[in-house]
Length: 538
Image 1 (tube, one colour):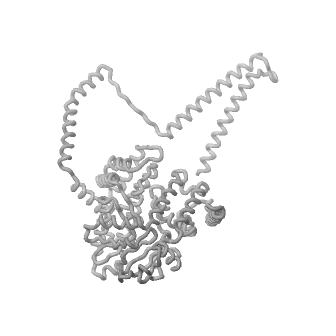
Image 2: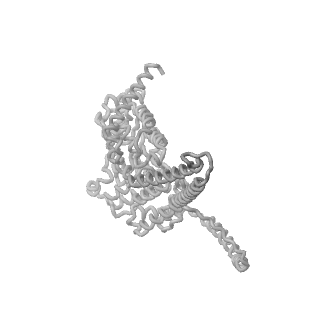
Image 3: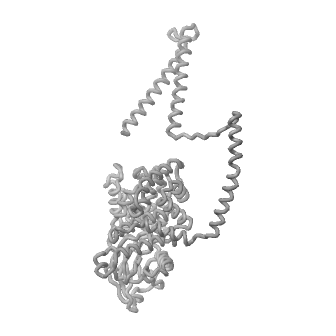
């Protein structure tokens, strides 16, 4: 890299860093960062930070819920690129003038977001399409901002003690990975094709046609859908649609995406779902979630555990699904999940909000320092959007009921009766064999007890707080005994004629007094400081 170019980059980075610093000072972040303040900061810093905020809102396993909810309100509409810049991106992507492919293009965008903006156009054959054009230089801009954030992250104040709970550099790396995927429109095109293939047999689902031959990493061309959004209830009712039927099909398809396909739309807000000719049309496949077969199986077990009020089953599912990034305390997790089931288990299945249920589980996992797979955090976001759409079009529908029914149906379909019978037969045989031995084992144990030879092994574990209390008590007792011994021995020495002497007192006795009173002063000062800290916390 040429010296002039390096100097220019350093100057640009310095200018941007000063701009970021000025915004942070403006909002007085040294006094703390509230959810609303964080959202306003990101909006003022510009499109790249808006996108980072949207990705951060997915991390309900790390960020407190109120921060995630606030970041989901980020204004996604940003100042559009001038049409001349759009033409420049198109010409560069096609290595020729864009009008060789399109007969016309509306210079006014339909929408303008942080990464791309969308224009309506017509192909040479007369077909109407949507052209999604990536913002010029967005990759370099976001890469620079991520680098600056890595440098600045150590200077940021804690957000709800977040800095002490998670590696912020790791979170930034993950956000950058997600952002890079969204900036690659070939990846989005592949998502559209996979989603369409998964739903090819679902008659009421439609995916817009992808014009792969005109799609590049910076330009995406797909069919134009002129239809009402799923939450335009008045229009849909006027057109003769049954909103309850739409709601049931909408939920049923989303549950299928999650439980059967393991590949689901992670941003199902009303703007991305339309109704055309009796079909639900899914748009914008830039943000998709993916769950492995193992994750899906564990999740189904968790849903069944919630439905059956089985604390152990839910606990096992949470431990299998998550990873501990702190000290593991299974007993605490069990108690938290028991309280969770007492709250949600007393409700009827139809009154359970699946999104709220998952968020409550996320809070428990945060409290117990358990990390979630990325797909699960995206699922939590998707469920929040789904519940919001249902509240508008068909509030009587319960996602939880449909999820449990779907899980039961899939379990019955996938059940291998022969394997289940063999497995249960083996269990029955082992139980029968061990059961026969129980009387003799009980007889042996009773004989040992009567002879006074019975033994019982106990393993006692204490909490950290109790261990600390015992340690402090023993330490203070030992120090007290030592001080008492010093005072007694020094007093005895002072009654003797032991030389050398200072002011008529044996030096060794005087030294004992000094050490004893120094230790007493140290203990009193330590106690006073501890009480002062406790008072300040209140």
